[in-house]
Image (cartoon, rainbow over all chains, first blue to last red; front, side, top):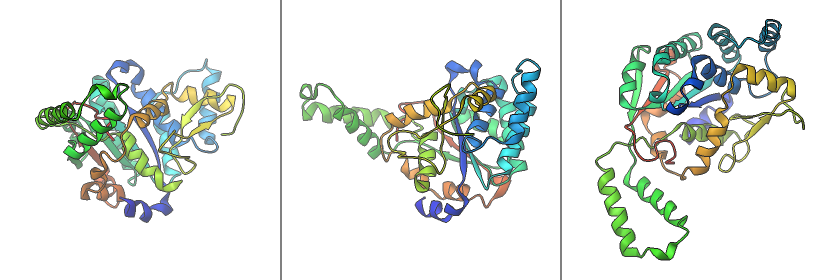
Length: 205
Length: 101
């Protein structure tokens, strides 16, 4: 990945991301989500003139929130002004189900208008089908943690134990063994939007 | 305009070239009160806050394998245009889907 990043250093992509949460579905209605992505895309430097004008216009009519069409227009302008934009959405399966088609259609429209835009999604397998309805090709990577990942994670948790003396090596070995056995039966998404964003940004510091 | 000010500030995660140390805290952009108002108008959501907490809990190195896959590299390159714009990481719920890294 480092070689890809180096190759694309001159492009300086921006990215917006979102963590979906089923506990906050009402707050994550489509306008709020696209607005949040827009905020991150324009979040560096001066705000674009069209956004300022739209805001002033909205204030004159009582501060009405931007509608989906307004946000899509502003987002398109912002993305078109940049070499490349990455949009990352974590836990798509936790997004408001009734608005998921609108979100996917909006993402499709963005990509059609700006073909260099990349969309990174994570979610449970059933959401993959929803994504396929809106995109000709969806590259799917099944995600599960390697045993090394799990052991490393457990070691990290052990180091944080506030009573390290309460566990001897034999007990620890048993715990690791049992967890690895149980984990082998599960397919766990171990990679999130944050990992991607770290990768995208760390070479641009 | 993004600049430092002491009054009416909001913070947004800034993932761009102005980032500081991404291993520790996520860099933020501070807006003057006028721009902060516009940002709130655009959306009440603040994904940067959630991002910071995820980063703090993440374990270094976990998930790096994904970044080395051909699929990811091809997608990242963007040569496929709109037809290959979407990468979907599929996984059932379990421990640390977002935090294991």
